[in-house]
Length: 97
Image 1 (tube, rainbow, N blue to C red):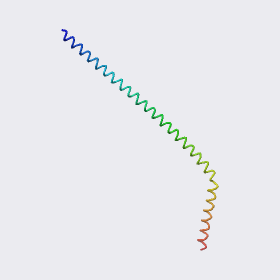
Image 2: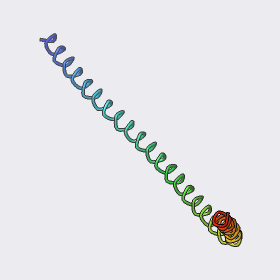
Image 3: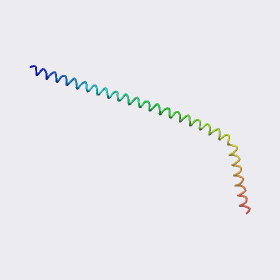
Image 4: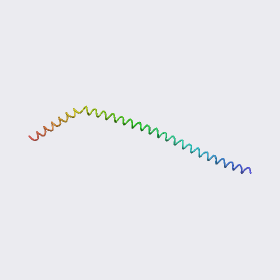
């Protein structure tokens, strides 16, 4: 009788050991999931910071472009006047020549 009792207890121990191994595996999986989510969160944070920096840079560039275009307006006007004059002289020359 003692050998069957020993086998029963050994089977119970094996069953409990399997349950414990299953719980440990689940705990490892949860830990790995938490770690991957934490990494994803930091990746999203750094991506958000990069886009924020890019938006700031674009805003600064557009501000500088608008300032330079306002400052360069007389230059464009002069160049346009010179090109128009050259075109006018060329057309008059063609008509008279």
